[in-house]
Image (cartoon, rainbow over all chains, first blue to last red; front, side, top):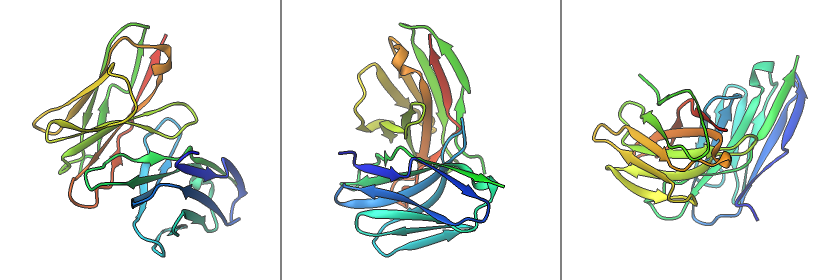
Length: 112
Length: 113
């Protein structure tokens, strides 16, 4: 079983049609869940870090939430410029562990 | 405030050759991590450098090695290139002891023929 699983793999939305992306994880001792946005051929762009269940963070049309075993990235009234691949990653274990474990990503396409 | 920079942008090599990729961290950061991202996949952790030493390593063979310099910049070296090494190589920097959020560079696209 993969430690981090994202769903759906791909999502097509009409402009203004709100939806959510899911990230499920199986690791224990979570020390941070990270959301990144990645445009084709570019490096991931940091969006949010969540550390404990119940935590929420917002940025423009994006809102990230965290439960004990999953996180959601809610997109409200998306625009075509929100089209990208959204990556979820977790860090767990000892304080010296810097390794991020990524999911495979959700590719979002927003049509005008 | 300069972000993470990587060079070169693109690179084409043949099987068996060796390659060196370079990374300069975001200003104020002291830790550099390297990731390999195959097409359509999430990034896979290669290793992390802190205080000029490899602090943690992912599941990659010894053909992959690295170095961190006193100015915190870093190099990734890959020997005896295989076709399967073709990927986007990402460098991420962070500041150990604080939020540890990793910020990524634009990547180096390596193609092995």
